[in-house]
Image 1 (cartoon, protein in one colour):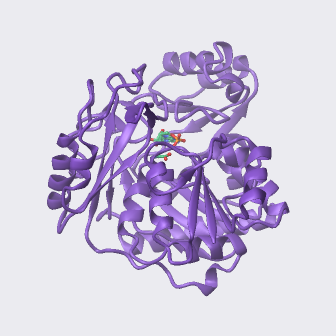
Image 2: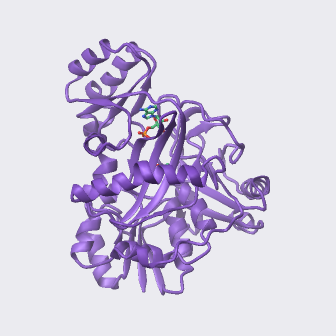
Length: 435
Ligand code: AMP
Ligand code: GLY
């Protein structure tokens, strides 16, 4: 069977790497891919949102399974177009993708189905939103742009002044374009953040191993948010008991809600949660694998991933055995270009990749890389994710940083505290430019 992975980041390199190991798979293709995916798959120069050309590739190549990485491809309706053409697809259609691409839609759905989340109000005019904030007597309040904003559309506002500034940024300055046509003003939830990944085929729920990214750019969780500076799996704080609670209170009600709303969901639901005193409450839904979470998950996923992805695509998840997991921890350190998450340079030659890959238990996944004149060059803010296994977290950290230190380009940087247990601080107002 041929498998097509759609996307071009570290998540897609990790998926290609894992899928290529499957006995069921003859060839992996990646559209458009990067310099890393080219080492395990055949890159096809078609953008992830170019639905018509992707359909043509799938037909021409007789693809047996399509795995869609990024949310914008899902939001463009790629999954349903392929499904109509009778191709098994891992990834929800446009309606399911709205759970991530519209915070107003997902909030309405949660309220209709009594899924625990922060109370909120929706506004389509800035004056009305500011009027509401003026009457708020509890702070902080959280102001969110409705649409996709590459992680930048959420403002945790300490007081009225910050609240007004957030409304202006989204609705008047249109900092997030059309994504800010509507906003939510949301109650601030106190607690520890956690996330859960569940593969869902419309009925059956398969919860994956625990994994956590490190969102802020600076050590000790300081500074603006990014797409993710590193990853650790498993997360000891998230126990089986907690997973059961999340399944009962959030995942099962969400699957019921999807069915009642006519969302035929075949893919991964990645739920951001706040573990409050009253139990888990949803911060947000994502409808795709996380990046860099996927890089750690595929390193620990010992059994073949393809039967699970294919069964999910076909609505037969209950028939497959759950994944076998490597009990050893995995740490992933993201190597970034200087300046990220603000502006950064592209096109620097990356050296030492082979030496890094030779370190024990290390796999280097590419995120923002490209090939130029036979060399691998930087092509994004998050350039690589250096993953390592170890007997314990400290061992995995040592391997990961030993490999990271062998990689060279000007202005490279990473957090040195990935995998250390850090009490989460409340993030500052967000910033992120994925890759
Ligand atoms: P989101 O993009 O919706 O995941 O929000 C980004 C970050 O903002 C989350 O990871 C939380 O740290 C924070 N956040 C969002 N909504 C809330 C809320 N209602 N209460 C507290 N923190 C929030
Ligand atoms: N690492 C967070 C995300 O993929 O959204």
